Length: 493
Image: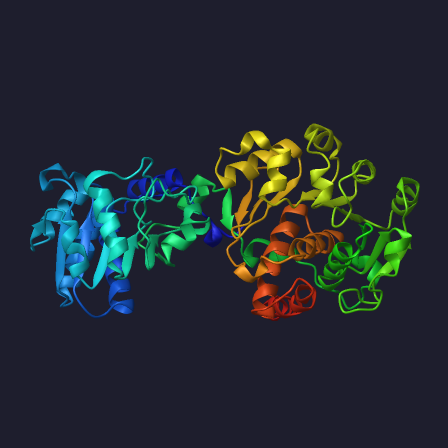
């Protein structure tokens, strides 16, 4: 895994700081570098007008004092408000406050809007309780001011581990964090509250990650490009895998999934569908002639279809219906110990007995639920953060979990986790999930490990949506994925 894509929890970032200091990097040096990075960001993106720095009682406030000093030395008009007493500051923050030679004002929300740029240095990433009193009043004044807000580390009120505000939180225009981002920078609504995210190098050595061993990453091609399948000059279609898609009477969903599996590189794709579905849209854009079809009117036909071992990945769920036949088809598929991708109805059909599904998982398996489908299988996990929900679900089910949304989380049974952040809002359209399931199946069929296949499929899904542009419908995505795939290959060469 690429260490540069690592995401650090609040505790892991504190450990990175501790190890850097233990290794000989003075804490004051780290704080000076952090505040200087914030000052540079203000100068670069908000070069005009007066600056108000809102400092809190901890190290986040110490970073704010450094930023204030650096901005004043650059000729900016700077005011500082401190939450608490100067005499209560400790350690590096107290030292940096001494180096600030300007006035330190008491908090006054009425004066916040009188400045052109606001720097939020109130609290860092680990605030675990809702803001109250003067802190809450300052945050609300900043949000209501309409002025650009640059947050240090994370917008005050937002937790770094789950991206959830604890009550009110600062709505930042930009956020400057240090060394590595945190999950809360990417998870919603944290990503929106952070605005534009900047990650600054403040002198923490990369090798501290060796001891920390982070288990979560930003979903990025660096995580999986090394195992992304590339057609060989001496290859053939059978070497690129054969996906079997179980369809239902409503054939469109299965066609979308099958088309996606083909476009992502599977050598062959067969739709196993009822007779009445075989003629639906046989030659339209959404169902290319390269998709093979096989009649499948019941469980005996399905068992005949999966008897061919060359069909190395089985995709079930899109348009299948949530009946007993779908449940049995899933159990039969899992019993083959081949790659299996389950979406939509193939997940919902186990709502009454999730353990029946989990106990049947025997080979590589990817589940792609949205929040509603997830809650039917894992109702007891609802109180957890999205990363923890996905992690525990993956461990319990022994499958890779793709918990879909604007901040899709991919979790492996071994504890690895990736958070995706490249999906545009246009993906909230009918059939997009069917395409994603097809991408997962197509990559799995070509030999990618399940976790990497799911991560690549999710990222390429978002990249395809970007390539298709505004107004996209799900039918556009399989064709549009050619552009990001081509880009990845160019970078490889």
